[in-house]
Image 1 (cartoon, rainbow, N blue to C red):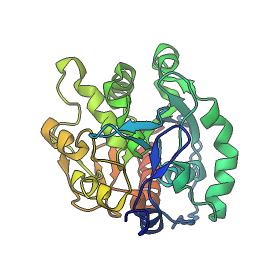
Image 2: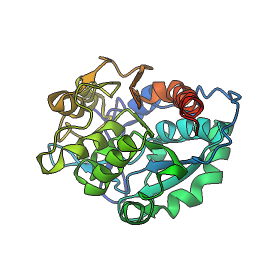
Image 3: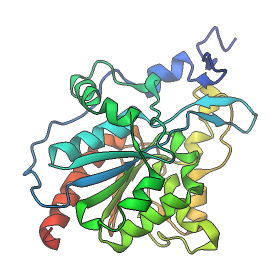
Length: 287
């Protein structure tokens, strides 16, 4: 019956499952709402934005089935393109230096801006730095960096919240006046700051995050092959954050030097907000 109505998750060669036909029609698009906004480009020394991407593809759901995930291409590429257009250099890193994984089933293949930009940065996704190398060699040169960006996609919940290098980088960014940017499930990485029973670095912060209440509904239409292994928005609230949105919508939020967005629908707004926040912060900080 699920196959008849397009609700059965689609089996991939490695045994994982990508979304069924119906939610692909409902929740993804061949284009984006990217706005080719013109910025007064940054020309200072802090040119780099460190992009922390996942290298893991498959999420084991509560029922043991695997969901084919990674970084959501819209949530990754649209904000990155805004940051690039504002004059910043994008440096991709994954935990071990393995290639970053994108949810290619959600790629906006008919969006010329995003397709052209992906062609530009594809080699960086395939040959990223390792977070170990970043921590070992770059944390003593904070003057090169303006921000850290953690893209969304359920893959951000895999490994990043338990990675001590993610913890070190987020604390380094916080201490050195960098902007931290994240979207959708990307804020899972923020939980790395609670490792070893440390106080949550973002205790008391407001942030936009993909709501677990929405994740709970998606198995019904075959977006995922089972229920989530853990509840992201609830875990962030338990740690001390305030989630400002209740829907998977275009909500964005700025609290101190944290810029966040709720879902793929927020990717363009987050990109514009992140670029503007970075440029304003650079001007007021004398970067």
